[in-house]
Length: 85
Image (cartoon, rainbow, N blue to C red; front, top):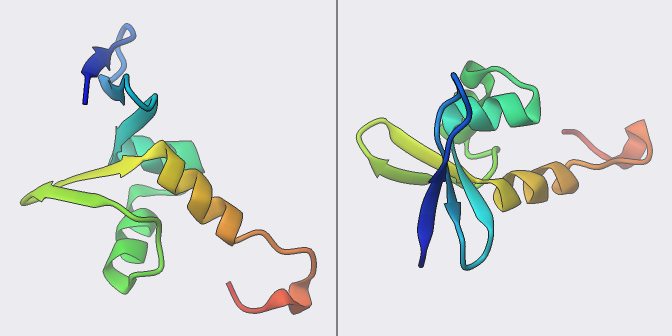
């Protein structure tokens, strides 16, 4: 796996796996990407209802952008009768 770090002025570094072009995001970045709070994303992780994540150590949690997109796709509905979210 070839990793590189992308930075923007004043923004946290984003780690990108150059072999698959998958971004690895912190919980804060993942929450921002999804438009939810960090607490909401953490609560989903506690309940096991959120996107897949990697726990690297202690509090170091990372999300792959692909897994976030897959989780959103799994939540798509066409009607309020499609089931509880």
